[in-house]
Image (tube, rainbow, N blue to C red):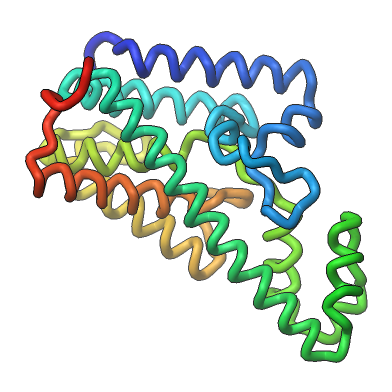
Length: 248
């Protein structure tokens, strides 16, 4: 681990400032800077970046910032500041893309289910864009479909986790035999085993809806950040894309 590096330090400072502001301004911060579904009236284009600095609570930001320091600092020392920044934000944007894409799937699935019952699409959109829904929808369409439909459009995403999952993948590919000491496992686990299992659990939870980590987690954002992290690492290794090509 060692000392904290410059890019990691600045990212942590910005995250903490956003967290403090959220404690002061509350819901207004979530409305402006969380990542909302594009069809939600709260959506703004800057949210694809700003949501990476928003967190839902103290433990959320604590674990994310610890992981950023523990796994990001070795990568920044190896790559340099600019390459690390590029990787971090690319993984975060990838997480936002996958998360939003999955929400589009759930949104369209629910919309189609309601339209197929004879409700005009315009009427459905008018109701949900006003922040409401019809209880009768649960009587005419599957409950899980309606739950996912409403969650997709009304639940914003916050957190640096997507970007950090990309960092985890990069760390595991760069230091596969590093032994990680985890609070809930009494023996050290090598990164090349732990990180794929962690991502697999997120994928399982996203597909099945059953989460061992609790509710309210954007599992597909985690998977998206990990996927984009893997693709960047694969490309860089294949093309010998090293830190000498970057202004440190």
